[in-house]
Image 1 (cartoon, rainbow, N blue to C red):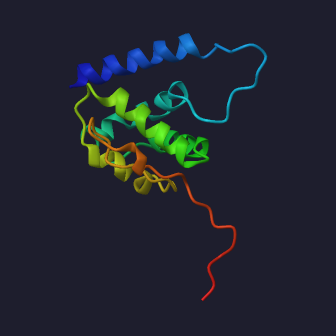
Image 2: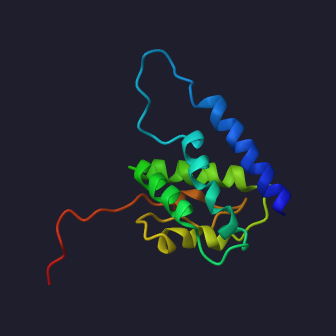
Length: 135
């Protein structure tokens, strides 16, 4: 299992380096997150979601917070879910632990328990209250 995690991290490092400098013309990047932004941010969560660590690391939580900040709409949340689903398919991990990450890291985003059969349409963007609820 450690070999798969190490291989995945190496793949993601090379992938990030290859695609970090790509731009299309002079257009500004679209506000929707991309898999190349999302995956490197959550690689530090692999020990937790694989069950090797009892809790997510600070680096994992920082990554989850960064990803949550990229999610502005439901479509963004679905995209993030699908990115994770596609990249985690070959790893051994506990799908329910992914769903626990937002709570464990105090992040306001809803992720379903992601497995190869996950319906990512259940992913929800962060919600922000503009005014406190009065009683």
